[in-house]
Image (tube, rainbow, N blue to C red; front, side, top):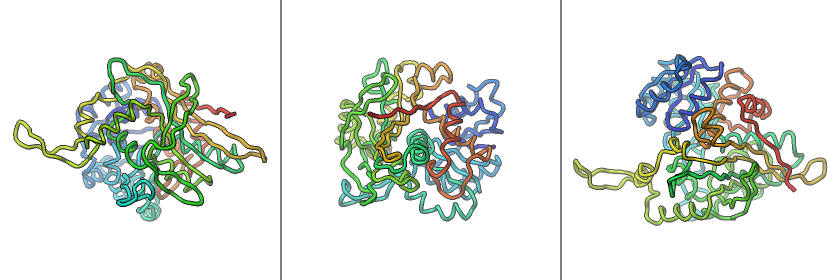
Length: 407
């Protein structure tokens, strides 16, 4: 399999380190707007680097992406950029006749009049609008194939197939006890994406009501995470699983809640109140005259790169799917989860836990596609495909998952 990886940040670099250890990969072109980042990712592979090459690429240049896919004879485009570039890369892969995999879906837009009640443009709507064209092409766009969304959706499918006869609720629950020495505020993942998903109206799905929205940080609950992480308060956050799972898994209710903590929520609220979460460009003075910049990009530039925090980070991160329903006529409640210890991921891959946990799942998916275990056409989420081969291969990668009976 020949892969064009677009994005050589923390997740993209972790993708190269994981994929370099697997035999399914024929060649991976690592492309980034900043060529030095792509070159650094390839150079770090050392003896494994002959299957990797670096190229400069503007992810917003749809025609340029299409040309590179064709020139390099790539079978699939793996998108490791932030969601702003989803649609240009998605369309370029379709035009080039390549398969496509991403970890975050096309951006949403709130309802103009009732943002905390009614959905406007939902996450992924832009991609699903092109589903017929993807199906006609015979190519697969596997969307939301990171950890959350991604592995969490695999867990939902597995629960429906093997653990439950009827499902009342599927709730993705994410929490961690990670700390970063020396920083008062140092998000472990892209602050651009974190602001987007945390300050947008969260989406909830109910079978009798469909998709609807609530206020940011609504419905707080304390969830007890496994492997020593412990109780963490989680709140509603906009996330792709709520838009994906109901398409293929029958459940009365689907939610996503993230363990942010009061301090993190307070800082996000301040950013919003000051307008620093905005992506609209404003004019500021510069050495050569006025410059147009996005406030959110300035915030991201002022904070440390999450990929560089591994040496200062301690603790574990947990991604998982809580499912409640019945089996053989009796009530059942389980939590399927995946925990990564930062000390382990740094020692084994020199990648901090959150970016490594995100990166391993698309690599597992690529291997399943390369070997023909996963097949499909059109625009699909992970819950549309068999879950057991994915979970078995994830364990083979040295990162097992867990199942905890609740109550």
